[in-house]
Structures are given as structure tokens and as C-alpha cells.
Image (cartoon, rainbow, N blue to C red; front, side, top):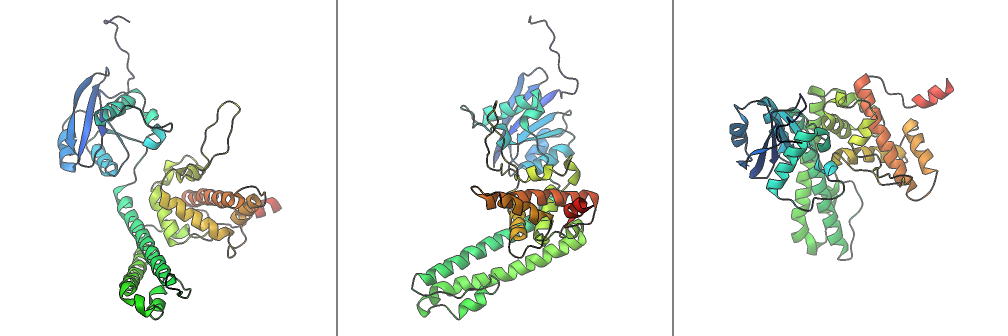
Length: 359
């Protein structure tokens, strides 16, 4: 091609593509024009004021950056300023391993060139709304309280066992009250402060549960409807609604299982189709809550329903880790069911498949 040959570009391509490699304090930027020439490189402070000053007042352009801690607020800021936002998914971009040569400048240029060439190569994601993010922070905070209490309870029980004694079994909610009178005298100075912290954490968890129930009643009534299946409580239903945020983001309900990383990874080549573990993509908290609900459904207290029968059929096939595969399959099917109930508004029939076969 001679130098005078014009370069044909897609009609929908922005005149300027900006790649931003986000850092905690400063971010590296690379600007490419429509012909792919680098017209500017530099750094910008990773603050709302600095980013607004950098992006405001310029013609509409495409801004590309990877998902990270700062990407949610930056995506909303860029969209509010009238620019096109592309949030790349790094785990999907580099499935074969990291690139051999990389630094902040090269990362910014890589994002800009990928965003200019084909946005699909970046596997773009959509961040949830600011309101959903703030409400989801309450769910995550409650989860951290429970984790901290569990660690402290395990530490107290282990310390008591180390001196040849044992605390009686009880629930986590009543542990502080029961442990006060059972601590060995020699360990009271060391463990009583921890027991008091456990008691305070229990009170905080109860307050968090009341706050989440109030949140459902005032702002997310759909989460109350999603509690119809057995094993789905307030926490699971609310987390499911907040993590998805917009149910129309999925073309079909079956995509909800993949969104929570409950589908097997895919690595097929020619005739080789290995059975791989689940992808574990998406949010770990949501996946853990769905798996916990599936364990209840398949457990001794789970009522007869289509989900339970589906999991039992998989477990009866035998083989290595059959029970684990059954739990994951029920969790995936539960995610699909909850999304279907959400978008259709239908009432939950636990024996729907059984009734359809009988009909």
C-alpha cells in the first residue's frame, strides 16, 4: 500500500480512543487518533477531580480501562461526561497467561489499540448502578462480620482444646453466652476479651439482618418474591438482585448460571473435550450463597422439589465427586430459576416438571 492510499475506517469508530491503565494513585493514559497514531501519553491522578479535568470539554471519544477497584466510579463519570465507556475484563482477555512484556505505559497502549480495533476483544462488562453498589456494600459488610466472628469462635475453641478441655457445642449466636461460664480459669484473661468481641459481633450481625430486611421491604420487593424456593433466604435473594442489578442484561435466564461462574470452563480442541472445573467467574459471594442454598436443598431438611430430584439424579450416577457436582448443578439451576421468576413474575411451583410430565 502506498503512502497516499486512504485508510478506510469503520463509520462508528470514535475519532479518539483513550486507553487508561488505572493505578491506585496515578493512572497511565495513551491517546490514539482514528488512524492509530499515538498522539499523547502521560499520567493522570486517579481522583474524580483530576479525571473530570482531563476528560471534560473534549469531543466524544472512546475510553477503555480494565475492571478494578476504581473502575465503577470512573465508568459512571466518563458516561456522565458524554464519552463512550469500555470496561475490559482482564480475566477473559488473558486466559492463556500474562503478556511477556508489560508496564503501565504498554498496558495503556494495549487497551487503546484493542479498543480501537475491536471492543469484543476486551470482553467488556457492565458495572452495576451506584445505588446497587452502595446497598451491596451492606451485604458484604454483614458477610465480613460473620467471617470475623467465625474466626474468633474457632480460635477460642482451639485454645481451650489445647489445655485438655472442650467447650460445649452451640450455635454461633449463643456462643458468647455459653462460653463465659465454661472458660478454664487459666485462660480467662486471654480469651474473655475475645468472647466479649464475639458478643458485640453477634449484636452487629443481628442489626445488619434487620437493616437488610428493611432494605428489601422499602427498595427491593422483588427479593421477597425470590425467597419462594427452599433454601433461599433474605441474604441470598437480596445479594442475587443487587449483583445482577438489571435482569434484562441477560438474553436468556440460562446465562445467569454462567454469570456466577457455575458452568464448566471450556477448552476444546479438535476431538478433545476435557471435563473441566467450573469457571468461578463473577462474584464469589453470590456464588457461595447459591451453593449454600443448593446444599440445603440436597440436605436432610430439603423438601421434595424439582431441584432436589435433579441433584439426586446426578449424585446417583456415582463417580468421583458426584455429590459436589450435584451441588453445583443445583446451584446453577437455582440461579436460572431465580432469574426466571424475576423477569416473568411467575409464582414458584416446586414440582413444575413433575406436574408437566403427569399432564
